[in-house]
Image (tube, helix red, strand yellow):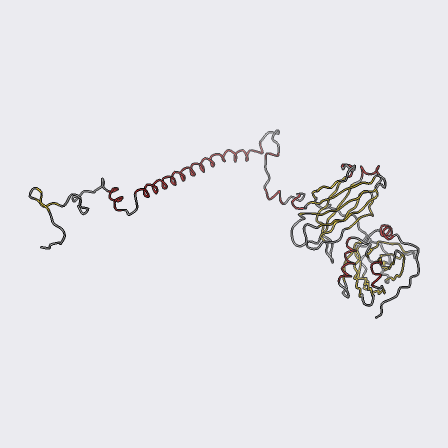
Amino acid sequence: MLHLHGWKPYQQGGKMRHPPDSPSALAPAGTTAIPGLIPDLIAGTPWPRWALIAGALAAGVLVVSCLVCAACCCCRRHRKKPRDKEAVGLGSARGTTTTHLVQPDVDSLESSPGGAQQWGRLQLSLEYDFGSQEIRVGLRHAANLRPGGTVDPYARVSVSTQSGHRHETKVHRGTFCPVFDETCCFHIPQAELPGTTLQVQLFNFKRFSGHEPLGELRLPLGTVDLQHVLEHWYPLGPPAAAEPEQVGELCFSLRYVPSSGRLTVVVLEARGLRPGLAEPYVKVQLMLNQRKWKKRKTATRKGTAAPYFNEAFTFLVPFSQVQNVDLVLAVWDRGLPLRAEPVGKVHLGARASGQPLQHWADMLAHARRPIAQWHPLQPAREVDRVLALQPRLRLHLPLPHS
């Protein structure tokens, strides 16, 4: 018989019994101690009683929240079913139902060709001088032009009553929000204001291909109060489907060497000339201080609307006079009656505007390097009006030493 130290049985009524409070008291065989299970678990847990109560409350709140969420989801599903049935039945609705009840998709709104989000905005100022009957159009800046790659935007301003007169801003490199800060004037009699439309077109400049339209603004001046100076933001719309008819384009390169004063013009080719030209050729003319100075011309090309020339001409222009020089390239046609008729002109120099001015500035900024570019031909009368030539005078300018 084994004897355990530290444990002594006690007698009660002549029988050996375990102490009543001993935790090692076992239940009789075949029975379970259910009434004392939870108290035994609580008593055997090392956590305090208040922590157990807090945990139980948190678990209860979590369970109730899950049940509430499930109930809400079920309610929403039941509510959507009638709407789906109504959407299917829109085709059988009566004529009193308006189209604004159907909401278009967000994707279709963003991809709308006339949406302001796609074409951007333009800040414009208008001022009409009733004395001189001129309208001053101030191009401030554009914002949020159409995204999609790098753009070099510039603006072209014209009015409907003067087809040959237009103003082009300089090109702004790599920006969707160009700041123009340029002003142009148009002579419009007061009586013609109600029927005149102001047109501002924005293009993406491309040196060796057609310029990509970015958007345009058409503003009827009859709807604008010109009694005061106006400055507003206007949404740009999509470009017109049909561009105004052009007389063609001319490609040439410019190169200037300041040390020797050599200005080299290489006439490369033309394209898009009107059909039926007999013998087109290009005349290169140099003006100094608004007076005709020097001129050269290419050979004629017979029976083609896209003649290729590739002829170079060199002029000696001192660096001190380069800002006083105007360069004009004109496409002419020597017809059968031996009478030349101008097809169109391109004006470059410090007094030019738009793409020609930018080309001239690029030539000066990159000395000794030829800069080639395509230019649309302008009406001859418009170029002559800008030049305002004086009677010809023979000029002898000192040339820099080689």
